Image 1: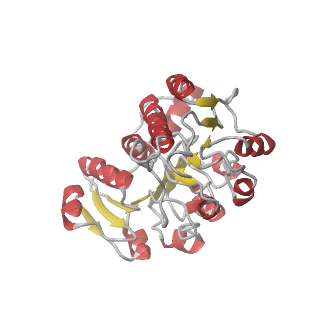
Image 2: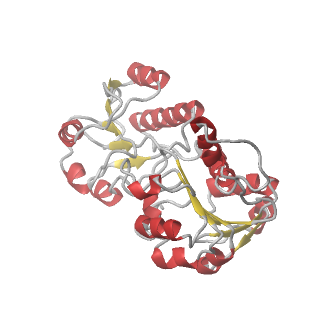
Image 3: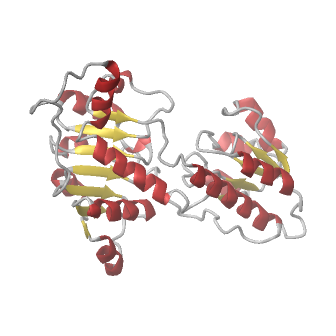
Length: 332
């Protein structure tokens, strides 16, 4: 599609409710069909949408697979994802059909890092368990042996995936006296390692066996699916804690639950799950787990910044330019 062919007032379909200020701006700028309910579109509605729009604005809750892309009409030329992760979009199918895919990098970094640290603090100090006892009336007063947890200062944090979020976590963790090790596809430049005071570990298994805390911060793709499988979970120390704010599919969930039940790892802080919104019932019964409803990026600021990036990508595309956040070949 050339610049002259692109619609100046594109038909945009949004699959979920977005912040009101973002919806209002989209309605001003484009021929926008907003979602009437704050729930995922069913498959039939989504199929009808891609058949009749120029731009689709999905979220991670929508499966934009090859079959759906194949059903898209000739008008659909841009999938402007509301969010950074695009593992729910078949990028190969989109490229084959000439559809550009964009995402919204950078806007979630600080909020996600804050949540990772909140989980890191809450698990070993048993904050959620203590809060539950207070609300249930079980607390009978202070005792020297009651609600004992583990100190954070002086421990080692292993970060898997040292991108923007991983680096932001490292900077926060240093303030709590943690030493930082990281595993990444590629080693960071020396200047970045010095800035975050982190040591590169090329062997993931070795890092898993050394760290008191493991934080997962890498994208989900074919290479990282079940990156922490049963074998690697068994490598972790029995006093170690797992933190996952990235994607549930990075972990073999059944193996993780088995390890938590058996006490072969100390605990976990989970904001994401393998089969969202379904949660393994055994997880709910465990006191050594903190469970959150995929809310690491759930701030007003992050949602509005994400929406503004989506709008910017659509406007640049409609004006005949390459969108600033186009997802390129080899994205991970």
